[in-house]
Length: 215
Image (tube, rainbow, N blue to C red):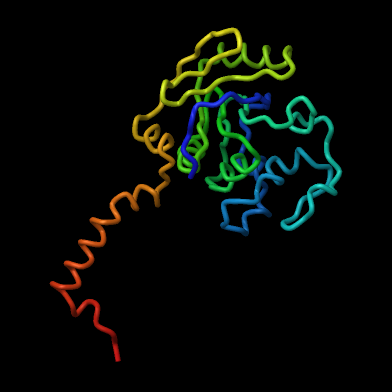
């Protein structure tokens, strides 16, 4: 998992509440358990005019010009501005995989579904919760300002607007530390690799019958 460093990113607004995980990555793409390759199918049913299937060449598919992520002004966005209860529905981990693979590093909204919120941190995606008034103002600013960008600093827990306004957000200290260091669940375990090897060697010495091969 990539360590989360301060960055300045283009903002794309998804002005819909209760966006569920099936909208983020439809069920037919859940056959793969690889973390990469889901970006072209993020929001598949909204981005394209045909039904998407695994293995398709998305560059040849007809796109929905009205969908926000297909608009030229939002190409290359790395921050997704959302509404209430983003990521609701089933608990598929493919949803943050798809968003991260698309190119998003952070989500800014009023609230996120609990399981999606947890999965995002475990996969290098930062979900930022801000008050409704602040999010409403950001939606208005993004709509009125082509190329609108925000600076996000996880260590300082701040979102900085182009006019210098600083918005602070809360984040669990443990999740913050993991994201800053790029530690997913496996990475956390590997931090104790030497202790694990020592324990296994001691156990093999003290209880060798557990490691004997069956004839």
